[in-house]
Image 1 (spheres, rainbow, N blue to C red):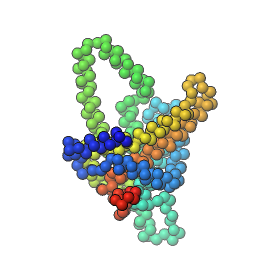
Image 2: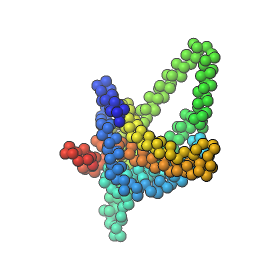
Image 3: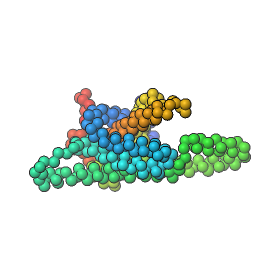
Image 4: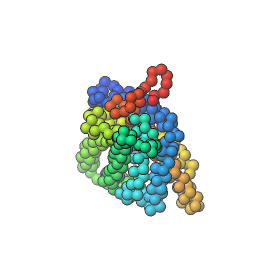
Length: 313
């Protein structure tokens, strides 16, 4: 959390404040709200996430059984049902956060026109957020494929070592020029990727039917994306660190391990990683919702910071 405090101090300094436009929020408050709200709603979210969790776990196991760990495009096809299920879960959670609506909705036997009229915006928001989330996940897979292809980490390490050997055996001046020519487009691509990070959260405004133009206007400014990345980073680090520690207990034991025990360890590892991956999606979504609370359409009285010692609602 010390890193988060440093990032917050840098981003709120006078040198970069002018780049943030209207999107102002406290990073630590957003992260704290995300963890607090998910913990507060743990019983509700456990019921909400049960079937999406089973679907995602089945898809992850399918990727493992079919040996598609390094085939990004085919992974996306296998994980497509998981994206839909997870998007539906997040859409329902967003309606709870912003409209105080909870799943499931009980429809009375004599449902009148007024009830159906009130139900339609909820249904449209859930469908829109689910589809947008799924499309974003598929687009991310395609982008990963275009950038890295089907390279495994071992392939990338080997290519890096070969490039270093060629550089050592060649002309230093030519190698330096080549490095510079590669550095400039790499920096531009990095800046473009950072700016586009705001689109990762498009499913949030769509859950409450907020127009895309209004959302992009509200998060205008390059530093808006930087602060979003900072929130996601501060949310992800504790979760992934905890997942890594627990995963160490269920390692397969290497090539000499019993195949049955190794397979069991791999299954338990996928089970744990699926839980933590869904927890990351829920916490980061709640944190970004709190960050966007000033411009997202919401029910009056929600997402307000109390000054009397109570927790945020």
